Structures are given as structure tokens and as C-alpha cells.
Image 1 (tube, rainbow, N blue to C red):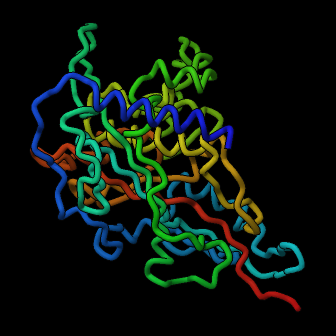
Image 2: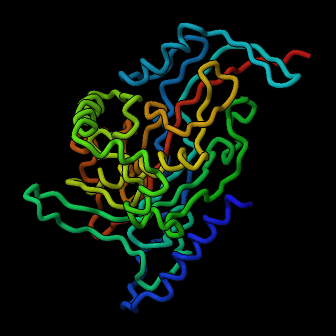
Image 3: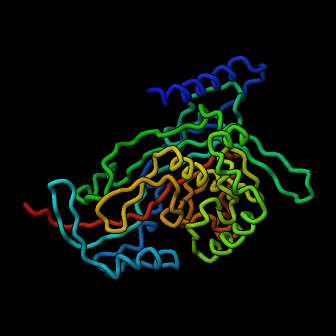
Length: 338
């Protein structure tokens, strides 16, 4: 309980700031009802491929998939034990749509629900501004909402696989109540390791990550890099950008990284027997599909340059975005023994 008190005080502080801040003209909500999540029509189902079953590959593969499926293909058989339960079978791997992320300039706009649940009267509003440093770059600020969205369970499919999560649909995080998301300085206080990566050497390393992302690869040890999308630090709602769709994706990825730092991110283990915590994310296990304002035709690995995928994804006068987060699942699918 003592650990929750600081978070409760922080949330109360944000609400108080919203209430006592100088009044500004209320803005009409831009939260559209048509964004309600429909897993059948909004999810790009080709993104679940490739699937590897007992070393047999189904579907097209790219460079990232080949690296991730190497172990599943070389070790097709598996055996697991959990408590008194024991099962053996074949290893299965695929991309599972199980999380959603909103990146919104309209505070409280829950796109998956198609409703504005937190009218703030213009406070905590998203923004875009130019940076007068000669680079012709811009800065965006937006709020992020992170949903637990186990699509397979929602559709009642493949529920007998032990690696399919049994959680229900839920809102895991809204950044409107996090002071650290509103300010990079506050974020540095609770994530001091970010100071280590705010130097030229760390920035040069991110250039290598950007080049790898363009080639369809991800360098997992460079966890502080988002390829062409920027940096994971500071973990806040500000991000520099040249392409607004890239910026949305960067904030969605940064929010996913933050869930790991909060202890709420897991991935399936390499043997396919369990899930393990991810305080520092494994970037190669995730890819994003934009669903709003324009449905994407494919999924992209973390950091992929917008020039390769973001064209015509920003509909006029629509500055709220919604992404489906696919996770690479490795599962030991088999038969339990008595």
C-alpha cells in the first residue's frame, strides 16, 4: 500500500492542476464514435503470419521473422512443466494481436470505446509546434491510452492454446493522470537511467538502429532507440518529428516501453512454456498496425521509416491515432499427461 501512495498523490496533483489552472476556452471534442474497436474489420489479419508449427513455416517471412523463428524451426518439439502439470508437444509461433494503443491530441478520447470519458475543458491538450533550431523539425505532444485487448479471446478462437492470454478487455493505462507523461523533466526523476542515453555516443548508436529498422531488422540491445521514430527517453508525451504518422507510432512504442518499466509487460519464453516479465522490452517481439485514422495495409517493425509505410495514413483534420500491437508468441502446444 505504501508504494501506491506516491502514485495516488501524483494523480491527485494532476487533477488539482487541471482544476486550478487558468481558464481557457473549451474546445469541441474531436473524439469520433466511429472509432469503436471491431476486431473483425480493424485488425489486419495477414499480420498474424508467418506461423511456424513444429518447424514448418506457413506464410511469407521477412528478415525479422526469420531471426525470431530460427529457434522454433530448429527445436520443433517441446516439453513443459507447471506445478504438477506436465505436457509435451510441438512448438508453435505466430504474431498475436493482444494490445491496443491510442495516441490522442484530445485528452480523454478513448478511441476504442468511441467516447470522450475525461472532458478537461482544453487542459492537457495535445499540440504541434515548430522548433527554431535550423533543422526544420517539429515537436508533438499527445496523450496515450494502453488497452489489454486479447483479440483471440474476444473472438473465442484458439482458447485451448496455453499461450493465449486469458485476460479480458481492459484499459491498462491513461497518461492523463500521469504527471511524468506531461513533463520530460518529471519523467527523468523516476527514470534516471534516461540520463545515460542523452549523450552523443548513445545518439550515434540510434543511427545504426534506424538503418537496421529500414532493412526490416531490430537491434534489441539498443532498447533506448526507436529507429527512425526517435528515442524511448524521456518517457513523456513530447516527441520530435518530421512525419506526424511516424510521431504517433513513436509515442505508441514509447508507451509500450513504459508499460515494461511499470512492470506490466510480459513476453512468452523461448521454450514456449510460460510468460516472463519484461522490465526492459525486447523490441523485435513487437510490431504495430495503424487502425485509425486510416487502416494500414501491413504491420511494421519498431522504428521503420515512415517513408516506407506512412503515406496517406493521415486523414485531413484527424489528429487522433489508434494502433494494434502484435506480439510474437512462442507456444508449446501439446497434450497434458496424467
